[in-house]
Image (tube, helix red, strand yellow):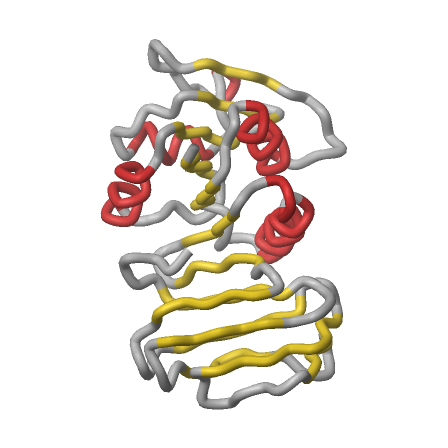
Length: 214
């Protein structure tokens, strides 16, 4: 099942939300993300979170037909709560919007949560109007327009055994490490790109171009 999760970060444009809604079989709002959806004319199926950003205390009216699942647990953030719900509902491909922007700490936390849930779904994508990112499986291939930016980041701190093809700056059984060497601002030189690595967790970041390759 394709599930769209909307968080309470910088709201995506109406155009992006329309595209994401069209692909979603279920929509979950993570707390204040409900306001983003409702103001865009999109009714989520579920709203979950600790409800410190959306609800009667903040002057929000709950439209009919939406299931509200309040979870006051402060050991998990609202995206974690939404992903746990998505797992319960049988989600397989998860697309998350509203998870970036405004606060760097929230953005980093949401990327960490994506890493935490990496093995729980077939794919988890975080997307905004500028970029889409995904934790890569050990072997990955995609189609990209030559000249399009492609960035890689070692989310686990260090990633070893990276080999790529179709990129301007190719790698052959090499490493990336935070504070030492990353793979930002590489570039596609072929329509066919392959990325493999042996250990660690590797984040792929690309501009939003439709259709997404994952």
